[in-house]
Length: 256
Image (cartoon, rainbow, N blue to C red; front, side):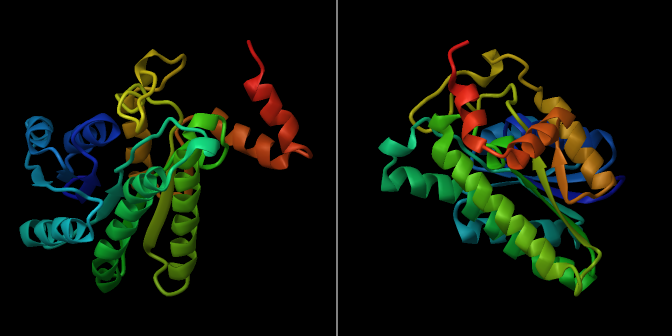
């Protein structure tokens, strides 16, 4: 990973910040992007040679500016990690148009803009690695109040797989990966639209550092679909292999 130029969006806290610090320790050159410049500067203090670009990454022009700045500084991009995301606490019956739009902007459009911003460069080099940070909820909708979040991550997963298919024959050395964490001990829950529980207080929440290590392993050894715990893949297989998904879903909502 030494000297690889790795763009990380949503790098001001949580998984993005942990990944930035982790790859920097491995000798990579991180390019950090997020809305909050002050928070990015704090992360950059622990990342030797980091380049920071502040901006709202739900705006296409700002994502394109990240790619341009990275190329101006380093002349190349080796890995692009789309990590911008936000949760929601609202069931399907109460969703508004604005709820859906915010989930699409944060969890789908920001990643689409990243994919489209870096792809011409990857194609010109004939190589590169694009990683979209999704969620186990993008496979298995365990939590009713995360309805639009789950839907947006399903959307992201479909876009990711479709891009992989698009490039499979024409650009076989451009890798496209999905990484799916479960509950992560960050401020994600508290920052959810309409509020939420603190993810750090939930049982078996995985640390952001653990997730960062899995993403770094995916950079070192590219795979198409990665879960940050083995049990998550087993749960996905159980759900989609069930003869009656509804029976499983009723088990999830039973009082404990």
